[in-house]
Image 1: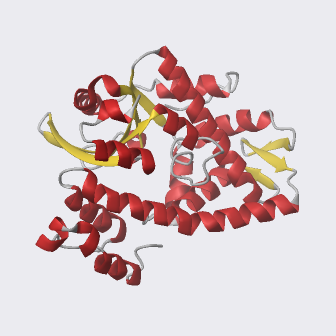
Image 2: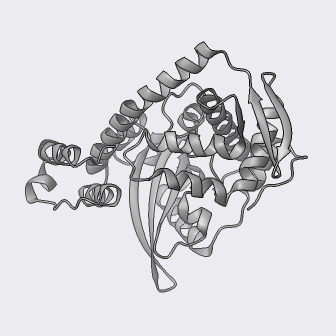
Image 3: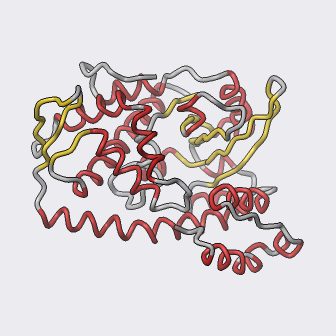
Length: 320
């Protein structure tokens, strides 16, 4: 969905985007996840490349299952503890749908933790950079939950802009803000994306980013809007140099900090669900291009046997 109605407020436009119709395949996966976690499910969010492109057959659908409480979600207390200490828990499922196999990577998190991690109180980019991007809500329990998720995503959008603006030139447009911000966010994770990815992603949703950015910045006293150039508004941010310096240092710190958290989540995934080792090795190959065979020792004792693999990947430049 393209958001271009600037007469609406930011939360109203986000709510409209969350109501974007999704494919029958995405709805089928949603029903599987609802059945899997039952009454614990508050809402299911669909985001990522498959949602943006609408091409799901050869991709992997990205979903977030927002739940009320981990004790209601899992039968095993270890899963609940792991999810609470290092959210989210990430799982993988496959399902036959109309003659094709739909592959889904989904994460589980409580509404409280999701709301907190989309806000400016969260240092790492994992949540607020993801959910500042296009997202649909494929299931929601009620309007109270919908409102809470709209607020959370609005906070993610606001946090993204606040964190990125100080590392931009004083004069910038929406495309520059999102291109630089997404590129910096990718650098905080164990991802293979090149700078061109953020350029293409920004261009593909250019109208959306222009509209939402203009609305979000219109209410900020330190931002001035100047005449449009090629139909794109430009902004001037009055940010003290000291604040800009601190922001640059924070982004430098997010890179090792975020990659460490990613690594811990990958290790955790090897323990938190059946087939976790295979999922982790697939994820490593997808992100780094390095294929690792699952040995019997790795399957029996993944935490002990993984460190030679980690070192090999590090030497090969996988943790950029």
